[in-house]
Length: 204
Image 1 (cartoon, rainbow, N blue to C red):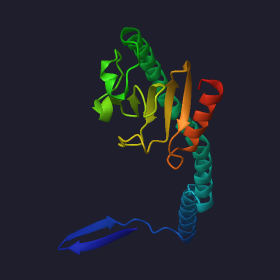
Image 2: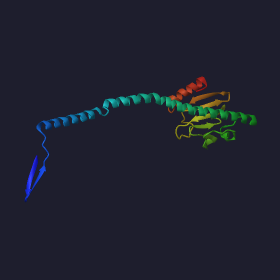
Image 3: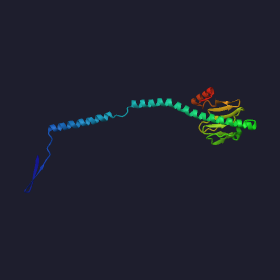
Image 4: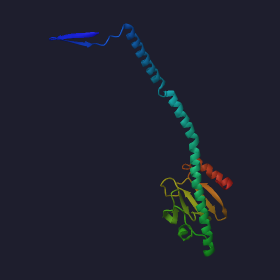
């Protein structure tokens, strides 16, 4: 279709775009609606997690954590206890050398006279006890007969009275490692089980 206008003696005609027929308009609306519904369906298929699905995931994680955490705690405490056993045996060997030279074992305030080095030892606390990050080592206790003792520390505690347990070797049986509970309120279930295992089998 053309639209013409007169300007003086000139006639200008411009072709106008044809209007779509009624049938074409209906087809266009149907096509647009179908495309929109298809996109809407795709959006609905990409839905987020439901609350039940999230609760199931949290439940599974909780079950796995309850199983894995005790095993992890046992492995960590077992490694630390093995370290203490090794150091206590080193102190006993130094005690035996001290006995050959002096005719007696070193007392609690004479540990600095023993030829022994404790890995990771930082400072010496009261009575010449050697302190590491996890244990406090002593050449003897308050009672006679102990050759070497390792007191398990809890955090930054430096006292031997509030420790959960101790690893010890006595003079009457220098080849046997023993574990004794000191504070029943502080010791954990994992530490108690390892102590019982050490006393019953002699190893971890």
